[in-house]
Length: 195
Image 1 (cartoon, rainbow, N blue to C red):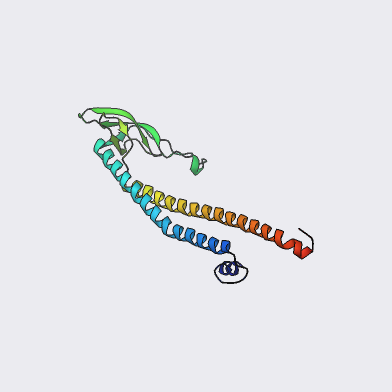
Image 2: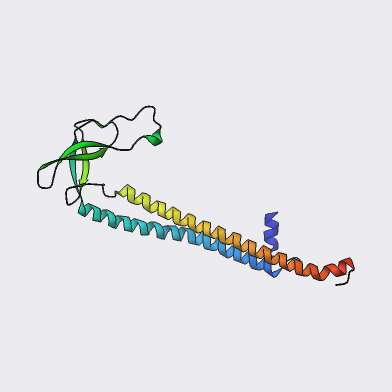
């Protein structure tokens, strides 16, 4: 049914109206914009986030330095009864490491559950010697870029679908108004009633 209705809008026939042809052209244009625009928007968004995150990672690497810390206490094992979503990814434990000036520092670091005393873990220190989050790695950068790219493409498709629905609704209201006008002209003759 749909292909017959769609093709009717393009062919010459007595039931075709100007609004039908205009609607078909508008929907074709919206579809073309979405097909071309979604990959373009996704690519631009992805590369933009990639460049930004690379710059952030470079700044973080310049401001932070890695050191190896020795864990001073066992991190508890996760409860076997806890479901995966409630298990912590990292737990705070005491540790020691060598600071920039060569002195030994004790503090708290976060390690995976089940880490045992004596293990060595890489941590990052800022210029003041405080424990800091690790800089963005290549995996983090690519995940952010791909997420932004797919998000931009999906947003473009959603906007195009929304525009198509609004256009269809507007054209349907126009057709209904035209049919009402024509019916007001035809109905008195058809029912043999005076206007």
